[in-house]
Amino acid sequence: MANTNTKFHPKKMDSGFCCNNIVLIGFMGSGKSSVGAALARSLSRVLLDCDTLIEQTESMRIAEIFAKVGEAGFRQKERALAEWLAHNVRNAVIATGGGLPIFYQEIRNLGVVVYLKADFETIHARLSGEERTKRPLFADIDKARALYEERAQSYAACAHYTIDVKGSAHDIASAIITLL
Ligand code: S3P
Image (cartoon, rainbow, N blue to C red; front, side, top):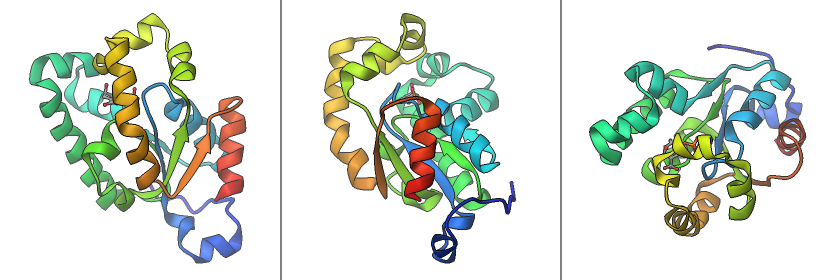
């Protein structure tokens, strides 16, 4: 995972951001994976997508894991992955699942935490029917909206930085690079 390439400002590099992971958090559909991919490309870093890693490790889709072991079982797997990442990974871009910072409050152990903030209507419009079926907690729109309201404060509270999701993934990645 080691990668010495960074385009961060030297002053910030001195403060330790150079080898830190950049950790993207936010509600389902806020663009963590697509912004993560653009960010990783721009910074020549590796992108680690937590949901994809869990799916690969379990050889099951997220919806199947929820069906088999329930949300609590999924959270255990997610926490185990987060702990592993905190101990073993540096210099990466990490796209988290929407619930990770809610259930793993030590999220800052992973690196610099950036909250991708989007309003619920934007999120809803972005997620196609197929994308919603991949997400058990988005099956019911009213419940998803309530979950969004419930979590919004927690995302903001655990993030080092908050970015409003506006424009393309590339634009948002550039805004994050400028910010850091
Ligand atoms: C979840 C978000 C999903 C996935 C799982 C639970 C959540 O990831 O981890 O369905 O609790 O918000 P995305 O945020 O990538 O959709």
